[in-house]
Length: 524
Ligand code: 4UW
Image (tube, rainbow, N blue to C red):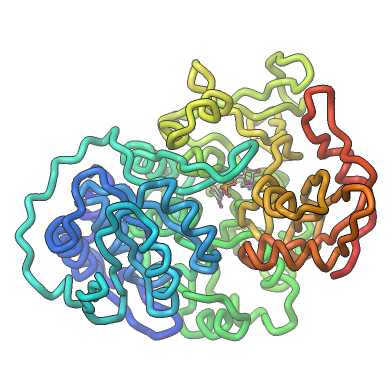
């Protein structure tokens, strides 16, 4: 509710909201606001979605994403979003765990949406963005939903209600629903838009254009980019799919002043021969995060632009799905010596760096687990009290599973990860999810998956497999098995290594750090 009120105030006064870089389709802020309102009425009206029920989105970055997600939140619904390139199995697992009652998608993913919808309890229908009604199949065209006048009594929504459940594996295990409230999301927008962190010292964007690729179905894309820039009144140019040629075309056509990227996209801009300095001539600010970035890549980017550190702002942000997401961010004005830092705490956020061995609180320049506390920290994991208690302690500290230190000026540096999570091009990969699939093979006695460094993706998953006596399985068999069940970026691009035993500690926990240094990469 509060999210919407704040966004509405900005919608009222501003020009183009979003343009689809692929089709050129665009909406202004007034139109967007009207569509959100009509969408809310349609979801509560014809689709009969009641306050607190869940809507699943299977959408790439298109302008209608904002209409559906804010329409749903306006109607008091809870949204969960999935990567459209997930397999039907991956989407079914998430949507049934979250009790999804309706799905919104585009033509390309209608077969998956319909297949998943059939398996969901009390399913109410599929919204087809860009398509027509087919009531016999429970399909509602978004256009016709928005065109018709629907009477609906929209509920009064409390700011402490959950409105978004993105999925994250957290520190360990399978992906879990992260319950974020309106207050979590709005607090984070307020925290990141304080004068210290902003280009115009807290003012709205002055004709700024943002070109963005990180997906809106991830918390960085949704709250860190989409809502953040909507609130600033920027013109947001989206791309439903990344290709080098299309991205460069958008750079030239829309002349963005701001880019929000993940490290692999920064590497593309800095090193790809197709990207020329002329393509980046309008860029004044570039924000990077979601995985570690090297200082040398930031330097290479400056070299590519042929700009000095004073002509272009290289900013970093750090956060997690569990913290809505931003907790640390580079102030807009910072000394260049801090370029490798993920920044300082955003307002109303506290941090502790805690020794991994002794549990004591550490001072500057000492690395330990980063704990964070603030109004942006999640309400908990959906239906998983044990995981919630492991991650957020009774004093409200979020145990991030990241190793960090801070310097004398309270700039933070992320140096390692203690949690299992693997980050492939900024995307989360849960080793448990891959391990469970490999364990389904009767030949397999034990398995462990870890992330290994990769120059392009940051990390890629590698599987260590123990076979039962006298059993045979090739690395290709294992890779194919994973490839059939999981989306592309979760595939075993780090290869497969066969071992006699998986190193485990006395409690039976996989010693992943030992595995990270074991074995050579095997090509598929
Ligand atoms: N440096 C090193 C980083 C960094 C990082 C995240 O998928 P999740 O749950 O969430 C994210 C959130 C990304 C993000 C948040 C805020 C922000 O300003 C921004 O901006 C540019 C991006 O990815 O994964 C959380 C995990 O991802 C790693 C870290 O391990 C964290 O626990 N991570 N940002 N700058 N590592």
